[in-house]
Length: 175
View 1: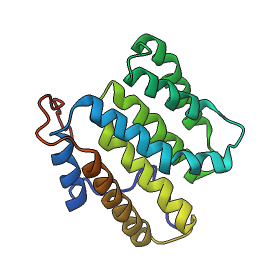
View 2 (view 1 turned 30 degrees about the horizontal axis):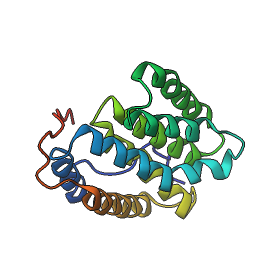
View 3 (view 1 turned 135 degrees about the vertical axis):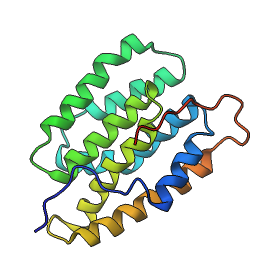
């Protein structure tokens, strides 16, 4: 069995480069709303399948969505973001659930850090890959599944992108 990685995906792949190029054209608001919605739809269920009694991540998502609507302040959101990160650290019983929790936590943090709108996908790719293929597949299998997940995320972001966004996020890729 290969050593499982926390994140999957290749930053220099075609799909990642396309994601980065598209992310640079979108506003912080659009990026955060998309990242949170995507994580809620695709990664939260993976976490909840193992940790059904935990509401930390779903509560954090709800608070972030309220923040994006202008109903909460960042100060009100900070404790929930910290709790989400702690939930991800604590989910050690299941690699796919832990990767999913990390993905949700990082997606929620995109309200403060727009580059997280890419970063959460690497955790999400691991979560989906491990959930779909199990924990004893080859690196090649996981890489193929991760690439497919990133391609799906790119299509999702394209679907919600704002054409000619007047206030694109200022992104400094440190990768």
